[in-house]
Length: 162
Image (cartoon, rainbow, N blue to C red; front, side):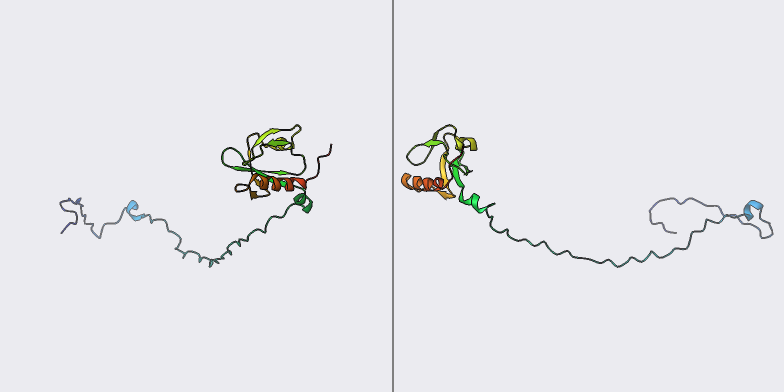
């Protein structure tokens, strides 16, 4: 006999002959059978899966924003100021006077406020530089052109009541 595992020793077993005339003892007669298992049933058939592909979401560009009301658009002015860190901060004004003093050269820098200052109440700070009027850059404009643009925009605002 050959062994697949090399020099392993197989445990020896003893063979005992039993004469046919000998009657089995009650312990030998009673042979316990292993418990019967229920016959194997094939797994239940799975219902066919329906694959539903959901349509990809449709991305639509939003229409251009319209002002809340025509009146607000016609009676408000947006001024953009450099904040000293290179960022432009936009302020929307809806009445005049704005109550701010500035130099008469480019760039237009806020020097002080005239109390009660509407611009100061809105968050404009001394030292800020006027960068845009109604979204239009003042960067390459002369002082006269920038002043004309600012005056025309603020001129359409209603006067503060009270």
